[in-house]
Length: 269
Image (cartoon, rainbow, N blue to C red; front, side, top):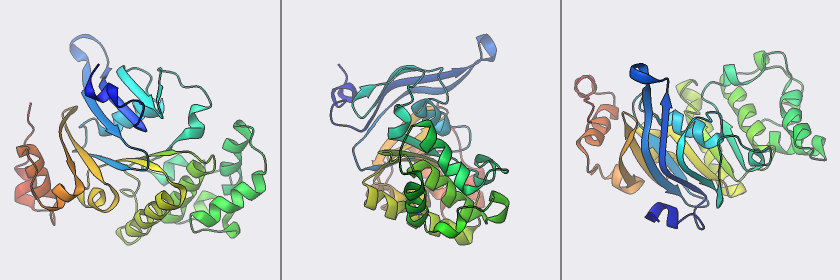
């Protein structure tokens, strides 16, 4: 048994030998290659990398949106199969990158939040909806508005509320602020930090932005061409002392957007 598999009883998330391929034959894309990591209960774990590095594909395998994977995935000590039962989604919810695309344009906030409650047969829908709207900083006045009546930041708060309304233990966050104006990104990150503390949530965040990881996470993994090339703590990241050359280049390119560093960014096999 591998060291990762041995932690299955104590970790909230275990990924061991995860592989994801799209297509067949010569045209196949090996999107994730032998990914291995664990996330402890209550921890915030980040995955960073360039576009196309495989980080969002890892999240989609974890949440069951992509059933075509091999390896071992365990959530809260339970080994997962490709197709997840309904009960899985009471524990694990995902917040998507684009709040404009993730909310139905013809549904009110009330309907958006009511649907998961009805699907899972939960009671006290009114009190659940009002409570979660307060939790995300909107309040009941927003309950019967449509997405087009909301700002980008408000839409993302609704998306977070939809994830929280089932009272999950884990939130998977796919670039949760990258589609937002810079002026509201910090507000959403601070909101997510507060919700994590108040609800004792475990976070897994994917982003290309190392500053977001440094603000939100305890540990991180760096992905390049589908592989996890390095794991480190946020303290090590802030100290500017990554082990791998690729991570050092990624760090240089992220500081104030150094054009020369960004153009020099290389991939490593």
